[in-house]
Length: 228
Image (cartoon, one colour):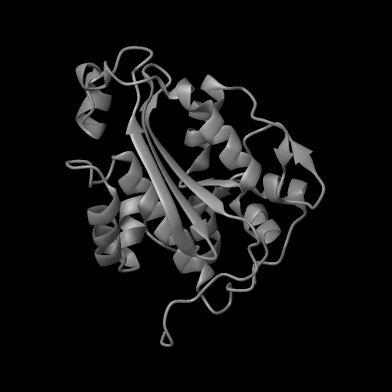
């Protein structure tokens, strides 16, 4: 595609792409946040968070974060104002969003009363509905061998852009998969890429939320929309 970078003109609010490292056992020990506006990265946030429980050996080997490394950090719950405020301004997005939603709700069952974003005038106290790049890619590309985050980045040749963004935004030694901001940047690039497709560049936020539902029943509950 030529003509320079595209913007996503049909999405009137920022989209906040999240990734958490941690588990129900340890709590959230790192978060990464990428804010997309008009299809462009507007800002990023990340930090380590003090564990609220034991970090298992398996989790530590995966994300590389030990209890000692986060012992001096504030717990995740110290950032209520950040996350509640973000959700008021735009929807959250993740790759396999049920994980992030579950970890978030384990800390705060509800957010502030905020726009639902799937329907004008509708309010919610929940953290969703979420945009989710996993079911979105499954819907748009139904016959891929894998929908893992790294596999999609490789398949759609986003590695170079991801590495460049990681060099700019990720902390030292946290620029790899299973590091929160790196994974959030990867998810944001996948969403941005979808919204730049000619057949999808004019889709509505409501449509994106419908197609992000993980099941047919979930899509029907929001009002089934045509794929294209």
